[in-house]
Image (cartoon, rainbow over all chains, first blue to last red; front, top):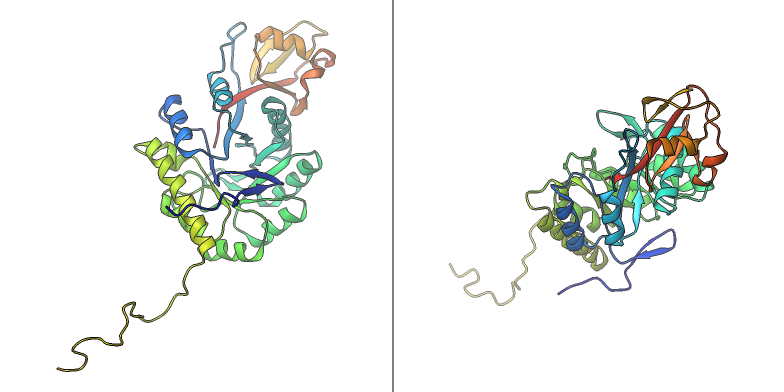
Length: 268
Length: 65
C-alpha cells in the first residue's frame, strides 16, 4: 500500500499533526455516530463552538458534548461561527480560549448571511488583534489572493480558504483562484468549507493544499462513519499524489504500449 | 436591578456581581462569561459588579463546524 511517509507531518504554528484531515462535530445523526466517525477518520483536530445556555434558575444539566470531547482526546479547534462583527469574534475567541483551554482558533467572521461568505474587510484586523493576544489563528477566508497575503502579513502562519460556501458540498468552484493561491503563498493552507465528496478532497490535496476541514460532507452522508473513512483515504491519496508529482498533461494521445515491433504493422 | 442573561430578563439584587448571576442560574462549568460584549475571565467574577440593563452572556461548548 502506498502510504505517505511518516515524516510527512502537517505543521501548523510549529506543531506537528499526524493527520491532514480536520473534522467538524455538528449535524451528525447522533453523538454515537459522531464518535464512530472520529474514530474512523482519526482527524488532527475537531472543531467545536460556544453557544448560550438558556436555563431557568436551577436547571443546569451535564454537558454531554463536553464529556465526549474530552473522552475522544483529540485537539480541539474552537470556532467563532456566527460572529458578524470584529468585537463579537474577539470576545468569543477569548471565551473559547478559557473554556477549551487552547490558543487554537478557527476565526470565522461572517459578512453575508446567505452565502456565509467571510467579512474580508474586517477579517485581517480581527486576525491581527487575536494573534497579538497570543492566539494561533486559522482564519476561514475566501480564495482571494490579496486577502490571504494580508492575513499572512499580519501573522497568520496558516490559512483556510473555502472551496465553496459552507454546507453546499459543491467542491472547489474556483479552481483557478485556488491553484493560483497555492502557487503564490507558501504557508500551510487547509481547504475549509464546501467540499462534498472524497474526490473533492483528493483534488485539492493533489493541488498541494496541506489539509482539509470537513463537517457536513461526513455528517450528512447516509453512512457518516464510512464516509469519514473515505475522506481520510482520499486526503492521504491526494497528498501522496502531490508528493509523487503528476505526469505532464498532453494535448494528444501518447501510446503507452511500445509501437516498435507492432505485429501486422501497415500490412493491409 | 433588571438585566438580561442570555437574552432573557432576570432580576438580581442591587450590588450583585457576575458571580451572583452565575449562582442565580446555577450554571455548571464549563462555560465562559461576557458582559456587554466584553469577555470577563473566570477569576474576575466575584470582583465584577453588575449594573442595571447589563447584557450578560454565559456560553458553553456545543458542536461546531
